[in-house]
Length: 158
Image (cartoon, rainbow, N blue to C red):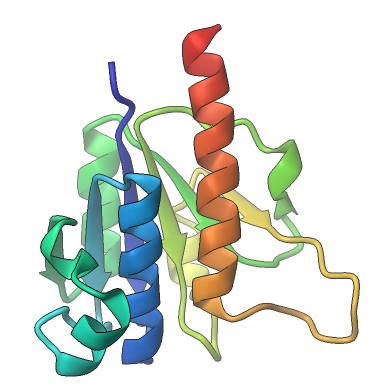
């Protein structure tokens, strides 16, 4: 039985990043993407250009308020995980996700707001070794998505 895995894009401002996330989501087999707040829609030519048609294969929904999407998914039994560096975040390699799962990805400059982080069941981060504190959101999304899928698929077979 296929495990459900959704993405929640919280106020992602770059249409390039939205398109790249759609393309990664298609390659990873993501079931649905929620585009929240100011996040651009795949009806945009820029999103279409970067996603190379992936916007047509991934179901998506726009919502003005991220917290409502989170609460709705929680009521359906989804584990809500935020990808963000914080004092409470854990290394993504040490995290053991449960399915159904929804991963929140945040704004390129401000990250995920504290009000949204409080609603997440867990917060994970990618450990950074260099001088920069973070990666581009679409790059970070790709790394986290494939690691979470690897864990879920391994434990699905066990």
